[in-house]
Amino acid sequence: MSTLIKTAEEIDKMRVAGRLAAEVLTMIGEHVKVGVSTETLNQICHDYIVNVQGSIPAPLNYRGFPKSICTSVNQVICHGIPSEKKILKDGDIINVDVTVIKDGYHGDTSKMFFVGQPSILAQRLVRVTQECLYKSLALVRPGCTLGDIGAVIQQHAQANRYSVVREYCGHGIGKVFHEEPQILHYGKAGEGMALQAGMTFTIEPMINAGTHHTKLLPDEWTVVTKDHKLSAQWEHTILVTETGVEILTARPEEDFSFLTGRAA
Image 1 (cartoon, rainbow, N blue to C red):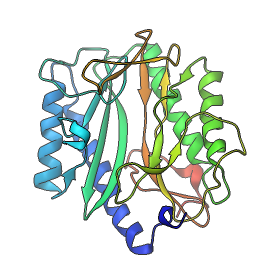
Image 2 (image 1 turned 180 degrees about the vertical axis):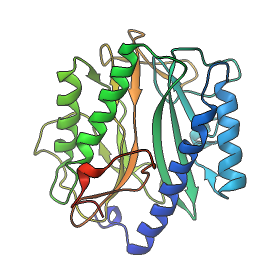
Image 3 (image 1 turned 180 degrees about the horizontal axis):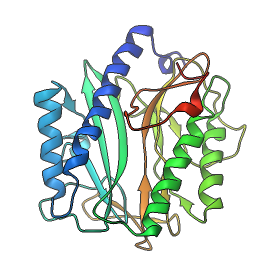
Image 4 (image 1 turned 60 degrees about the vertical axis):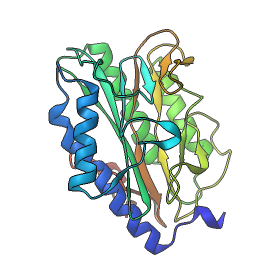
């Protein structure tokens, strides 16, 4: 358990890494538009992370991953590989997933973007998925269990007739990209590990418009919905504080007033 609790010095470094990751997502927004390839987005992010931030893009060469960000379009759930051949079209939805390493520590975050004019169905899926993330963030405090987090996400998704991806989950994070604990996005309230102040981890619900079933493509990275229906995801790296939660990858456009009184 002691390895899961970060020191004050480690937390300061996590704050920096988280802020930098959030800045990449803020920067890339204006470039997400019709006619742009996902490889172009990858190159812009790579150059910004390396040359402007003086940081390292964590996904590049991680277990053989060939690019600096993940770009997951429409029915792609996660780990989409940027490609010159993947050109964004009007109505697409895309998740851009960024992880930076600064001074040895990781900041991991993702955001959904609309390309052109999305359908009402796509807009609703993206909104509900973000609500799933925010409802889980509102629970985080010492004593909250991992089951509490999973349950509130699952309940909100299913109440909206969506399904939760089960094979992929959030994770502890720090010096190591993926460490314990695993943060499942489904479960039963009151079950699992109780949170303690000083823990840092991601919550990153992947919500499908259809069934929860997934398929791994032959590239051994790209995960898609088995029924080819849309999927959405939002992700933040967070710190459990003595009184609640601190969102280490918060962006300026986000309203976390619902955390007032608990957020550090």
